[in-house]
Structure formats: C-alpha cells, structure tokens
Image (cartoon, rainbow, N blue to C red; front, side, top):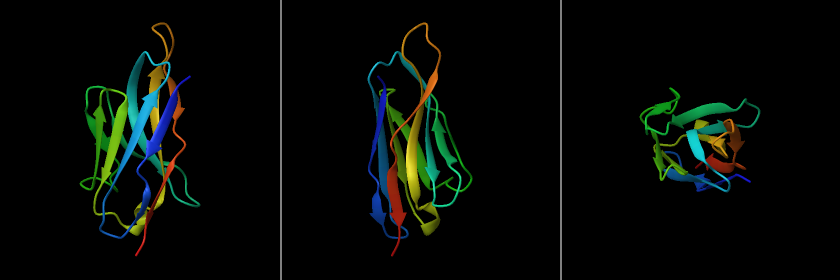
Length: 120
C-alpha cells in the first residue's frame, strides 16, 4: 500500500517562509512526476508546482520566483515557499504518479493535505 505523508504547514506572517515536505512510502517500484497542489476555501484545487524524476520543475505563474520544488531520493519532495502572502492560504496537497510493480501502470496518489495560513 502506498502512502504520501505531508508535513510542514502552519501559520506564518505575510512575507514569511515555510517549507513543506512529502514522503512516499510503501509498495513503490518507481515514481514519475511529483506535484504540489493547493485548494483555498471556496476555490478549485490548483497545481502549484511539478518536479519530474529528472529534477526539472515547472511552476504556476502565481508562485514563480517565490516557491521552489525539489526532490530527494526520488521519494521525498519539498516545497520551499518564500515571501508568502494571504493569497497563498490554502490546504496544500502532495501528489505522485507511482508504479507499484514493473508490470503495473502509473496511478496517482494523494497525501492528506497540510494547512498553510498566511496572516498577520
């Protein structure tokens, strides 16, 4: 069974920083892309950042230059968030495309989410 466990959320003042982490564990053969999404109250879930197994990354326009996604040991992904503003307040979710065995297809797995609140 595959699990994604996030940590690192919390309350931060505007202009502050947080680092989120997400670790995949369980029956994993290989992981493709890993992503961070976020969902603010009353809004749709949006893609924040993506990192491929090669390490290449892409970002939503709203976070470019402020957020950095990195991947370690192919199973851990971080999201460094700097210069946070109230619009960054949301539940942040980790997602990963995972193959559980050589012959299986990639399936998408989600973490449970971690709350980030930016407020004075």
